[in-house]
Image (tube, rainbow, N blue to C red; front, side, top):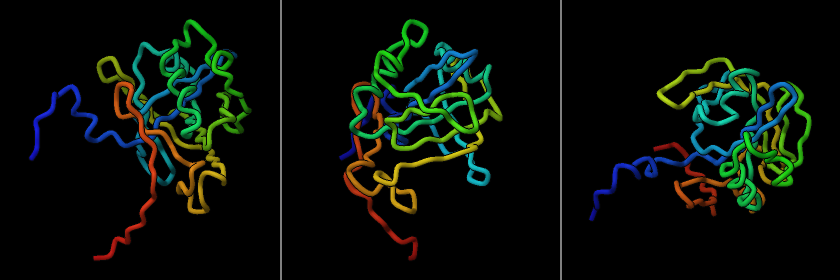
Length: 185
């Protein structure tokens, strides 16, 4: 039996992308924001789309600096990741408050977050304002992944690689099993 659900929860039926920590930098100041609305936009060259509300400090930093880093946290970072999405960067230094370690990126000024399992450095190539939300398209300029969390095909391969998915509100999940299904019929 199927049940009608409230429309305000409809997006939860298709939420499947990972929770990411987007770090940005502008005029020597760094910020980090947790977002769950990302998607691959192209693969050659790789591009990623991010949705960020215009009230966030990261929105301003990415628009002005034209770059950012997508940091991919895993299960053991859930509390810190939630903190990145709950604390305003306009009022506090989230890196210091949450004990996040900055590492120098190679192709952008925004920092990597050492505790994350993977990083995508990117340059802003397009931005659109859709009502109060910005859609940012980043061309990925460098990608790094921890081999303890990802295998040689860059797929999650063990408990260290349990990326976090935000299902809305206070609900999160991590994948328990990677299943390979050949695309042959």
